[in-house]
Image (cartoon, each protein chain N blue to C red):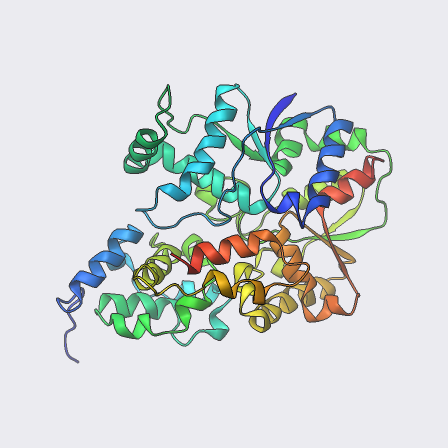
Length: 136
Length: 262
């Protein structure tokens, strides 16, 4: 078995940005999988929550950035509240999303698309949160 | 007892009944909730990024306004409560956020998170007391089997929200008991409803909410109560509620009913 360097030099800049925005220490994660076991959205995820952290540890950011997982996370904070090592994965997920949508023109949800997503009953709360989460 | 009250955008539009029943009930309970004059939308989601400052300002404005009046700030919407409470925690413990927010707002006195924000359910539990509430009930909801749906925002992260045990909460069940009904605990009562994902992943959210409602029905829950407008919307869109087998209402509606002001 070959040795793996945690926090490799490739993609260092991008990774540093994610760590800075989230304020989290990914080296604390010991891959116990508790976050994935409790995640209510994991059914629809192509990479499981604990695997997201592992990929970050290995510097394989492309796999994370192109995943469905980061967009299917509902920020319910179950992962963070159950983590025995106090890693807040919800903050990491947010930081990954932000590094993508903060790039000009990359907002995931455009204002013009909002009306088409509404029905008569949808609360304002959903629109405001969606907009905050997907538009920068 | 007098409090500053923060309504939030949804309570003025799609969730008017959450507010109306709460305010009518407050009167019956002898509590004065004064709506803040210039409240601004909380943003609905807590800004998880450490470098976001502007999105925290509206919460701080409300916290400061209540603190200056020497009043606690009362919230009703689970999302508003979550955002304002977490921002207040940042003002207490995050030097960077506190410094930048204070610089920007140019307050006469530096704000360091001294204010207190409480949710209406905490007002009932900690300020009025459930025993006192029981005494004030005029029409106990006897024989009604009610399941609490907590969702995420009131409970997690528990260290900051300090609302109840995040894995096994009891505040809404205690409330249900206080108004004379029978609370029923079911496993999915703290599981996420999908939240804002319902904006463009409706089918997936339906899957999540259907498991929640199924879990409630399996434990013979007759009706579900919640404190969150988005939870209510999502639960109502589950496969099962479509068939009208079970109703989803705001806890304030049951409160008003029990107090005889509905």
